[in-house]
Each structure stands twice: as structure tokens, then as C-alpha cells.
Image 1 (cartoon, rainbow, N blue to C red):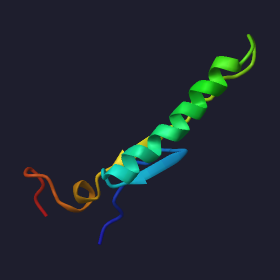
Image 2 (image 1 turned 30 degrees about the horizontal axis):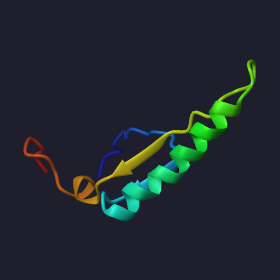
Image 3 (image 1 turned 90 degrees about the vertical axis):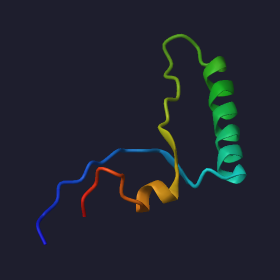
Image 4 (image 1 turned 180 degrees about the horizontal axis):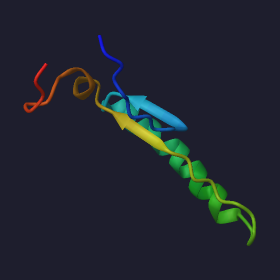
Length: 68
């Protein structure tokens, strides 16, 4: 087995699966972030979180061009 190089993405929040719970789960943090950012005064930092919703099947199934 060779050492494969993997891509890494730094995320603050990850939801696995695109079901209703995951999609709805992204709404609350998004609203809180918007509310926070609207109250930020000039010069203060706004929140810029990285949020991802991953489809589990896409992680497991090789693409059509993948030859494993």
C-alpha cells in the first residue's frame, strides 16, 4: 500500500447526509451568524465559519471515471 496524498479541508461544522435534519441543522447556525454579523460594529470581526453538508454515498461510491 503506497502513501496516498489526501486533500484536507478545515471546517468549523460538518453535517453528514442531506436529509431534512442535516439541511435544517444548517439553518440555525446561519441565522445566528447573520444576527451576530449585523450587530458587529465597524472594526470588529465578523464570523466566517466554514460549514459543509456531505452526502455519505458520494464519499463511498467511486465515480464512473475512478478505476479501483
